[in-house]
Image 1 (spheres, rainbow, N blue to C red):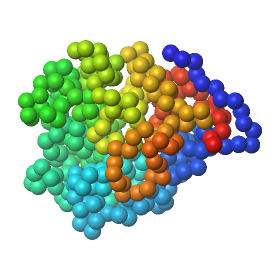
Image 2: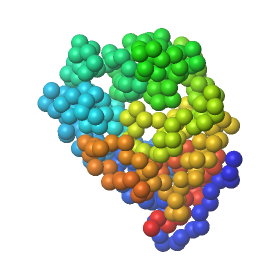
Image 3: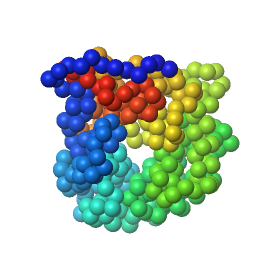
Image 4: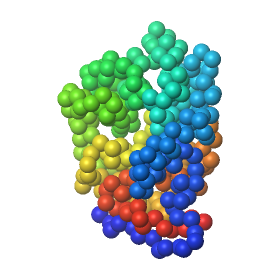
Amino acid sequence: MSEPVTYPMQNGHMTVIDWLLDSDPAIRWQVMRDLTDASAEDVAAERARIATEGWGAQLLAAQDPDGRWGGGTYFPEWISTEATLTLLYRFGLDPVGEEARRAIAPVHEAARWDYDPNLRFFEGEVEPCINGRAVAIGAYFGQDVRGIVDRLLTEQMADGGWNCEQENGSTRGSFDSTLNVLEGLLEYEQSNGANGDVAAARVRGEEYLLERDLLRRLSDGEIGQKRWLFIGFPNAWFYDVARVVDYFRQARPAADDRMTEALDILESKRDADGRWPLDHAYHDRLPVDLGESEGNPSRWITLRALRTLHWAGRWKPEAATAEPS
């Protein structure tokens, strides 16, 4: 493990933390919570602004009259109901706030899954990766998603993973599907309290990834997909090295030695100013402009990377004094 990074002080200039804070409330409150010593009251006040300012307010205002977004449930990709609710979840919209409750109220009935229009939103559909995200959204916003959770528990494969191709005969787990399911199960437990069956399945799923060092096939030790090394945001179903280690930051009290390579790769992507670029935009469009483009510094990825490296003991918040150019 490398030593925690320290940056030279640049008096009078913007630090990396300042640069992160010079943004939308959806980012600011998470920076305050995870990377500064801001009080809980100040963090909560900043978080409350998501519903009325910036990207969060724009997403809420874009809701269709029938309660969906983009005219569909999973499609059109990136602007649909599922994609928009995932963004609001990632933004951290207060789930008990009036704005969130009003937005969520019609979703279950209005957003029927494209796979089967008889299936309501919080009943889930057939693919584990989509169902994992539906569980995360539903659990976070206080909806009953236990039926989807129970289905996912029955679909866990012998190796501990999940795979959206299981219905087509696959017998091995998938990194992408497994991470989507794990994120949903973790949010379910965080929102509803510890659950033995869910926790056991989640730990088995985590071991599926850890046994493979978060990146490598067991069969030949090679990195399974080169795209996993290119960091993006938002992710939809796509697995990448920053997303998976950020998951473990939330799931475990400390890093595991089997995460070392992934953490090394994440660290290596830091630029000379202490920021991380958007390696790859998975999306071709978004319902709001996050102000980020491929190859340029990304606040979302920098936030994700710094809080993960802090958790792993590789970075100190008080050391973030590099001057972004």
